[in-house]
Image (cartoon, rainbow, N blue to C red; front, side, top):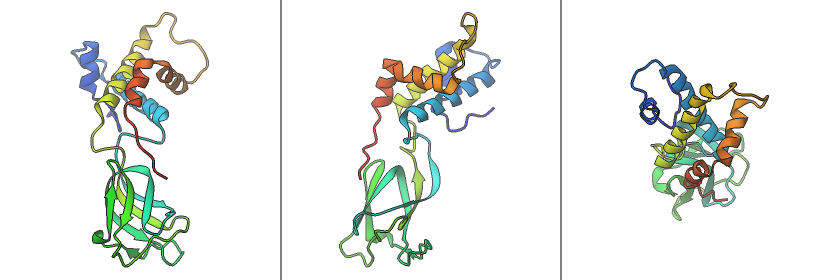
Length: 193
């Protein structure tokens, strides 16, 4: 099973556990993916994998758009000047600058011919969404720690008891582990509204 949007590699977890063969690879891959989604649950809405596509936003200022979703890069900005969500006007790249890493603001140049409409869903931004092009080291380490714990659960005396779904239990575990929270809290996204 390949790992989808994982925050650690199979080899990183195997090295930590001292596993040299590949007999446990499928289990470890599930643990890494589950650990990555636990981190997403703790850090929501922030995620550390990237996706490409369009997102729509409401501008609160005619010359400044605050992006409420972390963005790695912007390839196009279009405005809905007609109020029909057609986004017929694509702004020239010379008309705006992006700010932050990850990007949190798009600011129009004073000489730009267009302004951001202030209507809901008035601006469509096309880009790469996520925190960064690579997973921060602190997030990788937290993922390894959680994946190792999930893998070791099979050795627990009497197995795992209780009716709490594993994902919710692991999110609570992560929130209660000071080392994991230290790592997760070291990576922030300054949301600007």
